Amino acid sequence: MLINYIKIAWKVLLRHPFYTFITLFGISLTLTVLMVITSFLDHLFGAHYPETKRNKTLYIGMVIQTDSARTSISSGPATFSFLNKYAKSLKTPEKVTIFSNFSFSNTYVNGKRIKLNTKYTDAEFWGVTDFQFLEGKPYNDQNIRNGDHVAVITDALKNQYFEKGDENVVGKNIEIESVNYKVIGVVKGSPPTRVYTYSDVYFPYTAPKSNYENKGIRGRYIALLLGKKESDLDEIESEFDSGIARIPKSEIGDVKKFPVLIIKADRYFDHFLNSLARDETQKIFFYAIVGLVLLMLMGLPAINLVNVNVSRILERASEIGVRKAFGAPSKALLWQFIIENVFITLIGGVFALIFSFAIVQMINASGWIAYADLTINFTVFLISILVCLFFGLLSGVLPAFRMSRLKIVDALKS
Image (cartoon, rainbow, N blue to C red; front, side):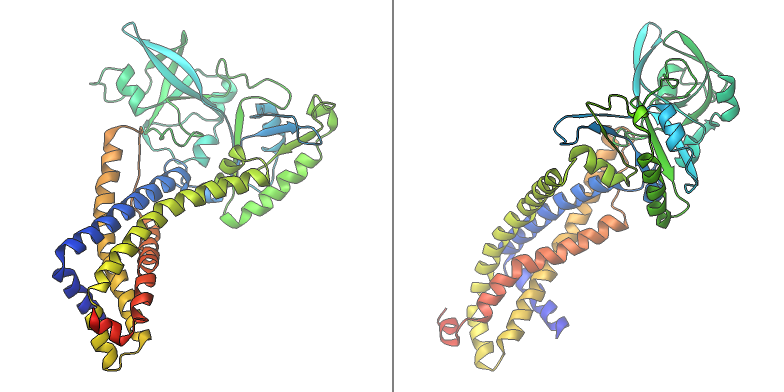
């Protein structure tokens, strides 16, 4: 029966090329937009280079100090010393890294200024992340203890600063803010959308201008807690929360104005969401906005397709009348039109998949996002298939239900 419905749907498509074009164009356009958006969201929140271990990593990126009524808030990253005391001391994580938010520096080549994003890290940074070393190696604890002026640079900075004919620049010097550093390694860069790993040059945290010796709570440093497996994250979070709960009032600073200290070790998406919405009301508002956007992206095209499908099916009213006269039940007709619409939607989905792949490759090659690596991977493909099925049902159930309830006399008169 299913094969027969699909054969009928195919013949219907061939019978009315204009309606077929409008239907497939609408479906393909909508699904292409959804697939590209899904690919971009996967690029933002998925576990990709060089943060391939996001699914088993917790992020400590924000220190919030507030009053008891939450009316006045002061927030920002932590100091190195604070994270060294309360994050590095944890027993549950496999590895813990502390590094700075990216800052800005300048270097010059033949009198031309190059603006740089710079980052100060510990040696564990290279074990928690998965940077690809094209040349050399990362700095280690010995380099940090010695206060060596060494740096890891990206391939993009290598091409800007050194002669393009230089195949290997490890061991050469690069001058940044009037300080000479020896290049110890060259890595493939991180996309700027991954703000915690993105930089042009990476220094040991003992390098000049890192401010790692600052005391107190608030500073410029972030910590990542890597678990051995994803199931360890709840235990790591619990251990960290216990340590934060024991912080004495004397360490909080302005305890009279900001007696409440909030520091969380969150999974990446939760960390991202908490940076945008700090209470449940704001989170509900955020989800409402996202839901409204998704509704507009899917609902409006679906309404248009409902109208197209109604017109397409109305032309088949006489066919419906004849089938009903010969005893076809309404349920069979209902399923026929739903299957037809899902089949047509899947055809549109194939075109959308091709268009989405082409658009994603264009974005990656365009340079709009440095080191962009948008993909149509299995996750994106699976979501797209589910969207196709949902879209097909959404735009097909109403006209199918309407036609299945059509009276025989009215159908034959059409």
